[in-house]
Figure 1 (cartoon, rainbow, N blue to C red):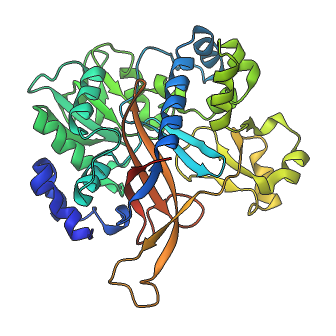
Figure 2 (cartoon, helix red, strand yellow; figure 1 turned 180 degrees about the horizontal axis):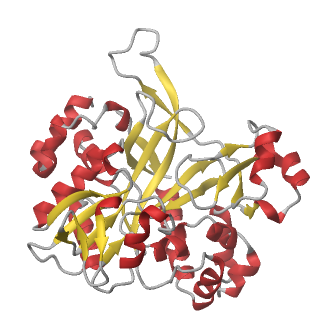
Length: 398
């Protein structure tokens, strides 16, 4: 599959996204020619883990502990999260959860990649109707003429503008009016949320200030308590599932027992979530001695932002983390797949290269909507290397 073939795919498989062929932000760095193998056993294990994780988050004591742990002013409710993603590395011992995202990217792109490769999406051939049903569950039935806004900070500077425009086209095809709006262009008077002078009915929230705690996001933080304003992803779902403090909770036996898990469920969860701790849970010298086997991650950021691999961190930088909200995860080497680099490269680099990858499970409720992969070189996924990017997966026996 070539990038040109990928761009031509919507014309026959999903014409709503045909504009991508002319969209300047849709670049080869975002899509890989590679198909990543996924064993049926690994898929089943991840699926069972996700279902178990979601059920634990519904336990009253889990919700009580979460409410006590998160920052003041965030109220837990029953909001779920559109485009919830569980991201896993593969290891010789099985899948390991790296993080959970409440606004994970890539769904339309991976769906098109399946079509471009002539593959049936995993786990179901229908990827577009589940997407629609997910937003219906979040916002209510589609009412033609209602207005959706896709919102983010500095939205028009985002590298993934092609994805924002993809969702805009998808929402419009369902009958919504839809605009892409910068967070600073929202206005709320206590009665009606407005954007660019027009009323807003539903918000697809791509902002990575997940608790909406920054001063620039106070308008949406105020409006979100209005029952007329439908926002997804919602800070509540982030608090319950994607805040890395929850991984600390989920990796400890005492908490899982408190939430009603039996021995088998505890074993399942802990096989996928290795021990995660707050940096303050051990002495600085203990972490420093163990650092080569650790990743240090901010509790409430996303992607690779301010993430440090222990084997590379300096003592000076390490010391600055000690009074911050950081978690410490065991370091796992991502599994690798061979990638044949595009033919435009020279003969020396046109040979197969080894790329790391993670698996991204798009989930709503307990249901896996679609599985894709992200290929990369270097420390973390960054969409900076030709040959890397989003990719489809193919189930194999085993």
